[in-house]
Image (cartoon, rainbow, N blue to C red):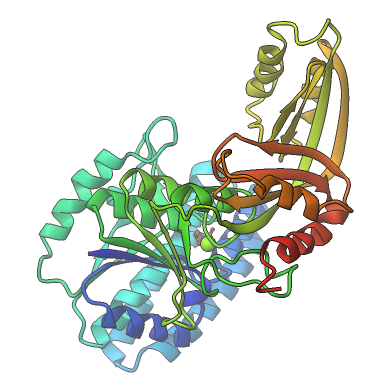
Length: 440
Ligand code: ASP
Ligand code: MG
């Protein structure tokens, strides 16, 4: 059995839902994970924003607009009157719930419930469309099996324990459909796996049931070797190691959610990134094999700040680095890149929250300078240190660009450069020209 995940744009209209249904039917009995229809989660966030501001009327107005959109989709999706009626009733329940949350005391728990409605609706619509097509499609309630523990980490044991019997109890099903993104937390309240979390849902289900493969269906033909928004000639990467894919997802490639690689990796379940618009294209296979001596891809992570701390004591006095890390840790700010020298350390973070406090504390132990508007350019591939010449090639490509930091040797798969935001496009293009000349 495989897990097939479709993102919001893949189910963004009645026509796209029908296309996905046809594609899924051809592939046999699998578990289909759906996101909310495109734009829905953003709208639910917007509604929640109004409710936090106690602007009940604007919240209700936005709910009405959303409902209208869904009604139009239903009318286009179903031909069978009885099924259309049932779909309308099911959606009515969702919209009544949203309206019941539109009150003055709207809090975080209400918001989580609000945000969960998109996936509950898209999967209900798919289940009923399948039924209309004569397919026995079983709707699996993610809120019953997808759970996080007290650290906010997915509870794989619980997922396995609850989900596997659900599958066994429906051995005659043609297909299963379930909601991405939504879950319950350790307290049993409705929660979610963060924005874009449907990829993680697919990976967790894949790990829990030991799926043959996890397929992430999106609207691009795999992970590309550079960012197609800034570089003209990019090509899909046919194969990536789990760790290469994790680095790429974390450092900018928007196709896969960064957290989704780990559950698949630990259980050695291949992930395939495929294109709903071009189902026969090869896409990208992410698995447990490294292609030696090849550079696979380049990605950029925006909105980075670099902080340099020069030690005010002599050289790298012991305890200095510990103190620096402790300060970031106390403010729960993870560090991305690090470069050290005998007299100081530079680190990057990607979130300015509490930055002034961090800087104030760092100033107690050294001289601090901050560079804003920076970008991490990450080159991914077989960068094992015995391989000669790969770092040189990447560095040489950037010879015309001022580089603020370089990080190499933290893993066998990555070399990262920190440059100014204004140099990002130039750096990405220079790297494509140097590293993938046959495609350029
Ligand atoms: N619907 C959620 C979002 O828009 C989850 C997802 O699509 O992966 O973030
Ligand atoms: Mg996504």
